[in-house]
Length: 290
Image (cartoon, rainbow, N blue to C red; front, top):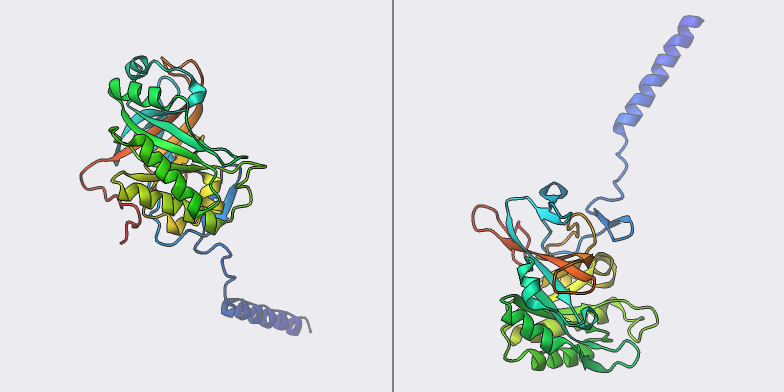
């Protein structure tokens, strides 16, 4: 009797093994997704199609003697810059340049988040003239609170009027940021993205390099990134390395920087310049496989 029971047990075990071997594996719920830092948490996202992916890696960054991030990889040269506005007050740009800053992204204007009025930044002319005279490369950004393409076009026209005649070597950026209680608080992804595209196309048609400034969360959840693949991205990500999933060549890594000639906290930025050679760097709108 014991032998029969043992034989039956072996047969049952074998049947279970065969059943397990023939069973389809459980599908991976995250297949085709990427695990990213959204700025407040690690989350799974579905990558946008046709948008170039960043090739930055944590191991390619260290801290320099002053505690600032330093790129140690082989694909890029880098430059240190600042982005400034009225809030930094009057700036001694010669001192800024002497402190190792090589470029500046300067706020040229903004749209009021309550009234919707378009206003030039009070320090724009002083900043752009001072930065250029000190030998810095200059770009500009407009702080948008547009509610869609029509208002974004108004903003682009305003910016083009302000920068006419200046040597703009860096991008001209559309900087829309979510603000609680603002007139643009309820804008949807399609309207927001349409505004960015219209702004960038008008800037490009005028002969400048357009860019979109965004936070990681804004890029992942508030823009339709597949429609921004043709433009440079300027990413605000306070971290030890630029971990935004999509390709970007401007990284805002600090909002509390200290720079000679600026008597206030200032945003610090790193520009990545692809090195010529064997490293394949996909241009905006293309992936490395294209």
